[in-house]
Amino acid sequence: MKKRLFCILLCLVMSFSLICIVSAGSADDSDFMTFKAYGVYKTAAPLDAVPATYEAWVRIPESRTGPSHIILGNDLSNCYNSFQFHITENGAPMIKFVNKVPNGVLSTRSYTFSNSAANTGKWVHVAITADTANQTISCYINGELSESKAFPFVPQVSPLPLVLGGDNRSGNTSFFKGQLRSTTIFSDVRTPAEIAADMAAVNIGDENLMAHYDLTAATFGNDIGDAAGNYDMKYINYWFDTVTPVTEYAYSMAIIGDQQIISISYPDKLHCIYDWILANKQAKNIEYVMALGDITNERDNATEWARVQAQFQRLSGKIPFAVCRGNHDYSAPYNTYLNFAGYTSDIVGNYDGRLEDMYKLIKIGKTDYLIMSLDYGASDGALAWACDVVERYPNHKVIVITHSYMADDGTTTDAHDPVAPSTNSGYNNGDDMWEKFVRKYENIVLVLSGHIDSDEIRATKAVGDHGNIVTQMLINPQGIDPYTPTGMVCMLYFNEDGNVVTTDYYSTIRNQYFNIGATRYTMYLGERSGDCNGDGTVTVADAVAAISAMLGKAEYKNADVNGDGKVTVSDVLSIIKDAAKGV
Image (tube, rainbow, N blue to C red):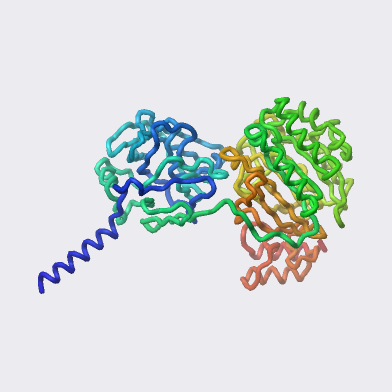
């Protein structure tokens, strides 16, 4: 009887050990995972703290060159607090930290361990410890200390999700290009003995374990659990062959984000964008085309400009179009190669006799539109001119296109955003354009911009001076294009009155839809803040509706007047005030 109890107890102990100890590596040479650009693994929530130890089992061919291999990261174009744990193109382990301090200035630190080769063609255990207390950052290869460096830096917690085998940058083109068996992060600075132990097995009962991803049995495309139970990875598929088509619309507009990568790196594919637009003009009733700048990459390359001009000329006489100048489009060739009748003949007016700031008028269905194209970082003079133009057309719905206006976080750009106009040969940033122009006019319904790349068709709403809601959109696929050309076109499908718009994002080269969870939605143009019932005015009925929303009994999209994400007494009082004024 005692022997039987002993055997049962032994089995329980062994089972408990299997639960608490997870293999960090496998002897089976086929047990690993490789990553691809057409999907990404992300956590549902950001990390609660910055890891102090980063570990991974990797295998990278000795001859491998090219882009770096990101094992774990939450970077997004250096716009937020973030880190990247990766292997450089030369096979050196590296970690990069970005802190965004309160005034918006970015502080970046990269630590590359050049004497610690991970590209041996064999399985290598890499560990990096970031010791802020002792201001030392160290790299371990196969459990042995390889290098240490001074570390006078305190990384800050990121608001972004953690990504496995890549980071948050557009298109996941920096995905891990070697083989990955496991990766682990700890909140403490691991000792050499602990790192050596982690090589064999990770104790999931360790109180400092933040996450452990065992990839020995993982399949790309399936979700991956965190053995620590904290930060499971959700697989997000980027590309779809078919989606439910948009059918309830009267007409559409085709928007071309920054095409610079295709223009210079894949010139034989540039025509695909315009082929598709022309081929679908009738089927999708495409009434207008807009290009959001950076139509070229090398600024004054005559061959590239001629190539781009030829594609726009194909639209001439078939679909009206408007273009805005990006920072990669030098002014002289812009005014030369776009100065052909098929583009200039319907320009109603421009600023200073040039094409950078101009407007066109068009009636589509029941709606009169004013299409305003503003230069990259438009000058004060151009914005004053734009104000005068819009004031002369109070009954037109105004769509503004400009290259740099909105950042990926949904805010208008400022001097601290990447390649801000005010610090890069332009004048006014998005913040300035909003204050000096956009917010002043209730008939400005839509602002479209590119410049900062994004996996999403990002849309936000801002309340203008007259209680009107301006929809602002960021459309820029250039981050998707470096690894493989896509030829993205953003479609805006309008209802007959032009106030309901549904979006789509289509690759004219891959013939697939991209990231539909973040690029397919319906929005409403020309709304009024506080107009809960959507009748175009703010009345006592809207105040009653807002009270219901405040009490959680109903939802009204325009009840949150101050835009703080909730409906409060302040919002209700604001609506009552507007109702009394008869807004």
